[in-house]
Length: 555
Image (cartoon, rainbow, N blue to C red; front, side, top):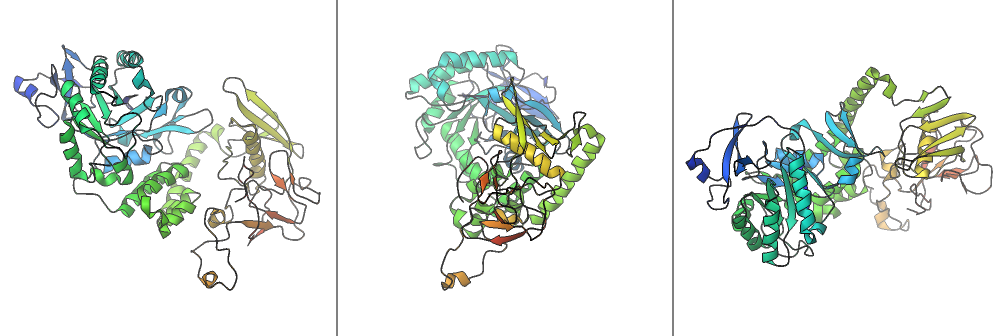
């Protein structure tokens, strides 16, 4: 069972008198008998009429968000982030649910107004954005919070206690989402108890807990629930069997006698399914999604995941292979012909951030030396975006653990200068890596990001042709911009490191104190790691090992 509450505050509502004739006209399309022992009060919201349920003379936890006759984007893990929600709203969805979030994680978050993006962010202690919203989805987004899955279905007492507490403790409309139980009698008994808590609506996924998408959805069970309850019932689960286009959504609603329909996988595959005119071409939809992802600084791994769900069987196409190989937002944009858009948007965001930082110099991202002589920066080590090979041996370092959340912060000393990241990390190793990057960045050295010299250097998932020189396939032109996925770097002769004394002198590669790998001075350094020097040349190598931070794998 999942509980939900509307994610943003809306305008004040004003109740008006309801005539007997108006009571007969139900908001779910005029169907009579589906809302028993209930009255529908009109709610004036921004000049438009919204019906709000009323029982026994009291408003049933509903403000301006109405769940009658709505097209709804379902909550989906890793899919229901801000870009997908905005895209669904553009294509005609009335309400959008965010991905399910764990309540404990939200309790640890800090609410941050992000002026650069014009968003409100809930940021975890490790500096990761857990939930991001903006004004565009105000009064239309539902914040989905719970304990994951259908575990509570076997504990109706706890369900009733949780929902009753939520309804009494907030003025926001509260809904819940359930699956059906093995028997219809048990299901109807459960939903009656849920209705008595005073929730605004209930979403029903017409499958049992153990059933998967390939199992048929039970329209009969949803219909029985809709005919039993007096609150709106939202039908869910029809993407595989029933919903292929916009008109199918209404057919599914009628088959289930529900008030509204919640669409999950069909919308994940193509969010334009909410359009009355019919779905838009997939490439157009994906480009629009990418634009939102870049504008709102969505992490590239989440962007890539959602785009892969849209491509589905086309993942083996040339564009699908480019997407699968992409290791940054820039490469995703380039794969879809949006490279210029990425550069322009990035420049605008950087300029906006610089303007804000100039207004608040204490929050500047550049190196700042405090009174203790420690150079500090807000750096988070990205275990995906950083290489693990280096030509620099480990500096002296020490760690501090914060008792409250058990996070770590490291200070490294190089040439009698101390460096520290102001961001804390749950990993000792990554905290040390972040401090090392502060040192490199303050010295103006490459910090070891994969593909730092060229975006195509780190396409490590791309399959290279390892064939004999005589093989005719080796004569075919490579994919544009593609280089060897296993590059190495050779230092130019006579080149000296600005951090002299950090270079290893041994005859073999040695792991250093912070998990990097160093090489003898003047010899080749494999990978694009922290030790890569300005002016170094990159060459293709069929045998060079590259591993990511925290891993001993070879690519």
